[in-house]
Structure formats: C-alpha cells, structure tokens
Image 1 (cartoon, rainbow, N blue to C red):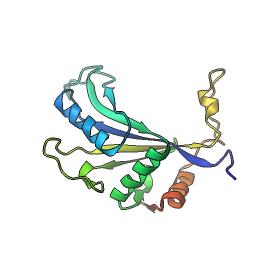
Image 2 (spheres, rainbow, N blue to C red):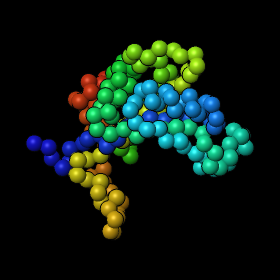
Image 3 (tube, rainbow, N blue to C red):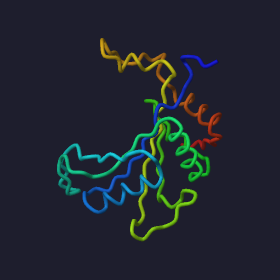
Length: 172
C-alpha cells in the first residue's frame, strides 16, 4: 500500500534552447511534437544579454511539461538513449535529476530530417513525496518545505534504480 512519504515523479520537463526566434524556434517545436504528445510552450529571455545578443522577453526556446503515462513513456525512451546510465552528480539536493540528449535522432524510430536539422534537449525529472509538498503550494499560509519532508539524493537514486533499472555511475 502506498504511503504518504513514498518518493514519486512529479513531472518531466523537456527544454530545447535555440537562442533566437523565427525558423529555428519553429523547428524546435516540431521536434518536441515528434517526441511527445504535449503542447510546446515558448520560453522567453529573463534579462538582456549583450554578449549573446538577446533582449529581455525575446523568445529563445521551447519546453513541454509531461505528467502521467506520457511522462513515463518519454522517460523510458530518454533513458534508453542514455543506455540506462545516470551520473551521480546529475541528482540535485532540491529534488530533481537532469540530463542532456545531444540529438533527437538518437531516440528509437527517429530518422534525420534535413528540413529540421539537429536539435539536442535538456530533460529534467522532478521528484516529490506522495503527500508532502502541499505545504509549499497551498493558498493559505504557504511555508518552506521542512527538511524531514525534502527528498534526499540517495532516495532519488534508489527510486530510479528500482523503477527504471538505471545504473548510477559515481563520478568524483
């Protein structure tokens, strides 16, 4: 029987940053549509950066957030691309695990499309306790999540090993 303190995956977020609006952004959207059934959202620059030639609120990428069965299906496919191996430093103290995929054609069944080109992506897996994070998100009197409810790196690693058969490589 599931307990309120069990670790579960809250969501999986896929981000493709292209750095500019226009045709590249539309191609990145089409890559996300190829890989998922989710609706891509355009991300905008938070501040102006002269070094990169980016203005505040300029569209610079696309992302999609997955939950439920679609999240599970995509995560299994993404871990297959990474040969079911994770690096230990990819797990954060704040309850997330992130990794990058260099090319969307690495997924099973994907072929290179010269009209789209090559796009890599960042995948972030966000964990939570089955019943513990409401305290931070509630409407009345929200509070920081207490330390005893926060998820530790070891718990996330154990969850990924047990549920997805992932090998975790210890890197110094």
